[in-house]
Image 1 (cartoon, one colour):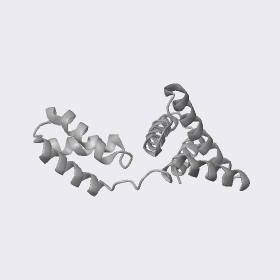
Image 2 (spheres, one colour):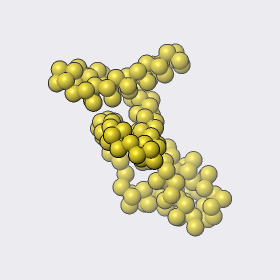
Image 3 (cartoon, one colour):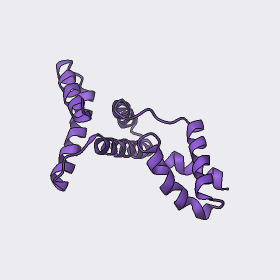
Length: 147
């Protein structure tokens, strides 16, 4: 079953169970998928759908920071709940130890020694951890290795 079909099935279940949060998140994802497909005139595969979901999670995390600054705990809680729903569809996230191990391998492979090599490391690293790690956290781990 493709991810698109799973989303449709989960949407039907959420509607039957009157789960408003899940329904709204899945509807948001499906709308983003449809918008992309209309704009690019191409059908998305599962990997493309995961990219969209990863971007949605990143946007929600950024929004949480802004909501917290504005003392809007209700919106922070709502965004966190939406992230939890999105994370159910993404691959298992890497632990910090796993990230460090992958980063050390990549640093050795590209021969990085200083912070100037950060771009080389990140460009080699991102395809390996696609959808399984937050870019901000990876960036921090790479900085630690190159200092």
